[in-house]
Length: 267
Image (tube, rainbow, N blue to C red):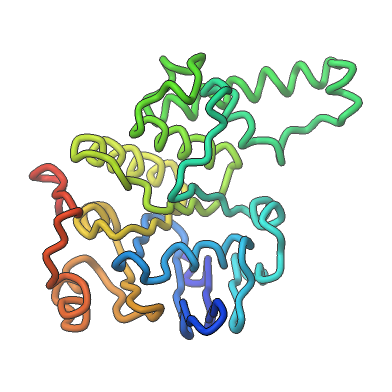
């Protein structure tokens, strides 16, 4: 296991007079599922945006497999092996499921504009391979039987799963999931939990952020806690549960929106 697969060093971000992240340091190891929890407004999505090039830091840097990512535009970050989903679903709803997944492969399809215009043998070969891979990814998230349907006709939970398949289409080494179960009911959360476990078992490293503490603790081997823009704790689920700063800042509140996962899913 590489202890410095993703290395976040002294990362800070301000928007005008508002400091959103302050001197965040975090190391994500290669392999397995790492979680980042914290209340709404803690800075979780801002941290993802800094990792993936949507935002630039005021101080600090992000290094992935030894290479500094800070300052790279998002498409270059994706080519380095990071792919993400978004808290707000960003599908092409007038396209089919399989077309949405193929869109996620656009940076890796090996044909030229000339090939596409002429529909050359190389274009047809790549397109056939892309459709086969897209169908496989839809199978991973239990959507293969709906591959030809329009994305806009999916249930909310299935749209979340389609976003996951599209993120996987970029063939990432590190998969970033931004509140993947937001808006899902308990059964949908439990199903997605199992699918994320299977994705990690295939060799992907997963980093997910969420405010649903029960979901994260039921899934992740290690967890960091972000509060008011600072990392206040890191450890296993048991260590996080017992950490006094976490109890005071997060676990002690009565958060009715964090639904419990089905009995037996928690460690």
